[in-house]
Length: 104
Image (cartoon, rainbow, N blue to C red; front, side, top):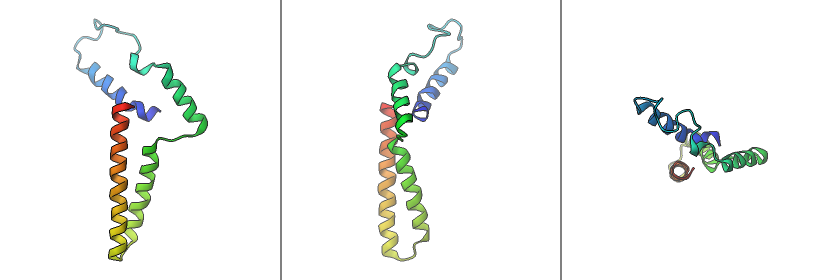
């Protein structure tokens, strides 16, 4: 869950850095509302207890394995099939990353 929150934290820090005077900002010294939702803590705890991993992590591992296998192939037909698999995994990973960034 912490990795999923990184874009939100970076966005909040970027916005804060762009402000000129932090002491007079509305809500100065208060926790960021979108980072302190109780539902996030519950989801994080459930994922830790069940050792669940985001789909993007599994796709990244599959992609790494597929790329390693592709490097060892010589036959054109086998390489072509493996390149299709790599392209499919890259597409699925890209879509999953977009979903994670958009919806958390």
